[in-house]
Image 1 (cartoon, rainbow, N blue to C red):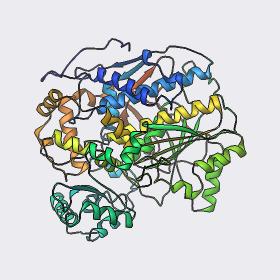
Image 2 (image 1 turned 45 degrees about the vertical axis):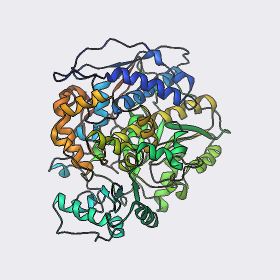
Image 3 (image 1 turned 180 degrees about the horizontal axis):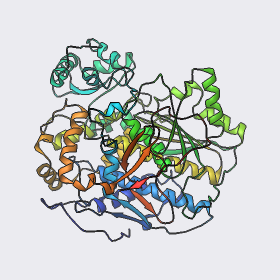
Length: 578
């Protein structure tokens, strides 16, 4: 593969033994090979892609992890850029056009830490005063009360050497009660005391027993498996036969819907495409955020009655409008149906089957497509993946990023890298962002298929499918792992299995600031005024550039439910590059 010239450089500490640009190139080849049946041939632009960096530490591994997270996300972002190039070529009837594509390795790392880099009036997610600017969507105090927050954590079980990740989700009460603890405990405010109390309850049960009570109470959770143990499960075997995302027709009766030239000198790939996003937290909303960066009109629909993690509104709502509708209310449902009648894409980030029960699953959209004479692209993102796949016994289970990382072997790999004989959930929600990027590519592939073949398309991806792709890239070699252990702060390596994702992320962030300081400079960021937040927002710049194609958001984030439920009259903000 051709590579464009990049600025050479390395850390002032021990020189890296591993090149992320070379690893990203190999990861892209692997991704294209695995996804050959899921993407149009016009997406295969290996010769157009260059992996670049501009900082002294750009071509090295930035994170204290043995996982090739940077390689994986750079490859996915490269395929996203290839999709944008192909869609613009399709708009203008160009065949065989070569467009220079650049993927900035530094900016892909920023993408993987987006929730930690994004600020509102200069305040990050951990700032004690940030709540004054962000609406409180933590309706059940599952995030704000430490004891309840730690109901989502990794703990030892009754059996020696066995671990389980319970997850109180956005409610916490059910999980705490099912392990014999009160749903609230005002006396427990100390971090370590909360962990010890909850772990003591969990260690009274085996992983098998926890699986049984989790199923009885419909809670998220999973045993912590090694990579080989996961592959030996029926679900692991089923997922090993799947690509990281799938794109399949659900009806073929509706005609092709070609893209029309936008008339802009530098066009967006998805200008005019209308997207309804039915998602919360990170992975699903990242699909919408990414589509918005390619010019799509993305409307995030949430309900005032559903909890969400408050600060993520500042991060993953970038580029969108947001509105509040309760689909159990007849009037709101009529409004939603009107929006849906004019939409091109529906993103479903809820537990498998939820939207089906509401009447908005893939089959329902296919029937509506035939009535209106125009196909839909339905994009589903979930934890375990495998919906409709033989042997994928966990397909319907609820889950989160930490659950996927634990069940697929990612957490065990992280713990062993840290010199432990126990698993540790890796820093930052990298599997979330990676899954969101996969969902964006899948949606773009579905839109291309609709434009050229007609019909409606079902696109599926999951956190576990991302982790399978990541693990199949292999771990960093021993020399590189040793370098990372030497360069990163010892405080990070003092973490244990039961340290929370918040604590892991905090210590990792402190360490990455020393190892890769360029990632935290203004040149990596956008800045804009958000009228709906009434604040200045700062967020990472897009990691990809496509010759002759515009990539980037036209509006800053806004809180959930900030806009009227309509497709007209959307404003554009003045966005400043760092």
